[in-house]
Every structure is written in structure tokens, then in C-alpha cells.
Image 1: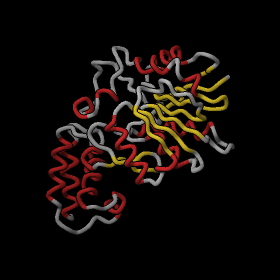
Image 2: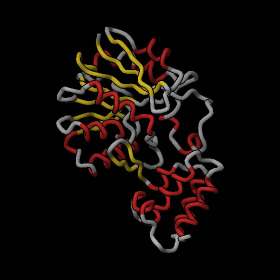
Image 3: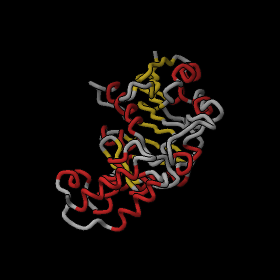
Image 4: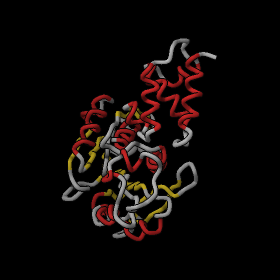
Length: 275
């Protein structure tokens, strides 16, 4: 067995203690250590010694640090984002917002103006701009550090001229309507049990939203009806058990809601449109 294959198997065994994706984690870390794509690693593992930095990265992962922070990168939809400490790591669950938007605008020219509230490293907005090349957008976040990552990601993806970044608390004072509003707000209740490393490494302000996990939705509720165009869609991420509570908060002034589920069949997004 090649040294690389042995190391991958060994690392996966070590990571099983605190990761549900131990094999994937080990492959991503090895690909980063070797400066190659994961696809190449899997299809044609190089016949060489294992870099020392691979084992250093495995130790960081064993301590709970997210793989995306260790490698500095995270794939989302059809783009790759640079991420690091201080920003929320993009999750596959959030892709349901993009999938729902594609379905909503199917058969049309797509959205012209897109708003991403709580944009983080630009995750949802930049994925949407990649899908609709004629669109432009605005990403809002209270964190200067998050906006720094978002700006760098837009520049690397060559979307810089199509996007504006604003440091603000949600959309307070914004006087514009958008065809597509995307939002992955904090929705975890204080004291909730999270996976290994999440609470320890990722920013509290991107995770927690009061005792019920609903504070961000309460802040968004009066703003959304004035921001959404009449033919538009607002796709808002929710916790798997929050559909009824968030619907009660956000359905107002002519808006109606439906629920979209993630790949695991859990409620994951509230979709708001005008009646």
C-alpha cells in the first residue's frame, strides 16, 4: 500500500472520534498538504512521502478546528470560497436557498438585483451571481472581518464590479427593492448542543440568536416586505424545527410562505413571495 493511502486510512481512524466525515476530512487535508485537488488524490494518489504538514493539520482537526479553517477554503454550490476564523463556515444545507431561487426564476431572465443579508464570506450572494451573470447584488454584514473575506472572494471570482458590500445591522435604512433576497441568519438558541468545534471556533454572532433562536427573524420581519419586489423571492434559512415559529414572525403585509427541505428531508428554508 502506498504511503499516502496508508496515511489517509490512519488519519480517518484518528478523526472518527470527533468527526462524522472522518474519511472526507482526511482527504481534504491531504489534498491541501500535497497542493493538489481532492479528485486527483482519489483517482491517482501520488507515490511519495506524506508531508509533515498533513499530520499537523490532522492534529488541528482532532482538536475540533473546522477543516475549512485549516485549509482556508470551502466549496459551495459551483464556487470555492476562501474562509477563516471570524466567519461562518458555509454548509451544504444552505444550498437549498440557491436551489429554491433557481426553481422560482425558472423560465424567466432571473433576478436582476440580489440582496444577501448576513453575507459572511459572500457565500449566498456570490453563488447567485455565478448563476445569473447579468445580475448585480449587495451583501450586508455587521462584521468587518466577514466583509473582508467577502470582498476578497468577489475579487478572486471576478465579480467585484457587480457587487457592493455594506457594513450594517441587517437592512436598516435601505431604500431599494430586490428581486431575490437571500439570508442565512443566526438561528441557534443560546445553550444549544452543537457539533464538535462549532461553538469553540466559529463566531457566536453568526450562530446564536437569543433564548429561542428567533431574535434575528424578529429584526428582519418589519424590513422584508419593503425590500422584496412584487415578483421576487426571499429565501430565509431556518432551523429544522423553526418553520411554524418563523412563519408567524415573517408572514405579514401580503407575504405568503412555503417551506423548502434540505437533502436530508428536514425543513431548512422559508420561501416568501407576494400573494
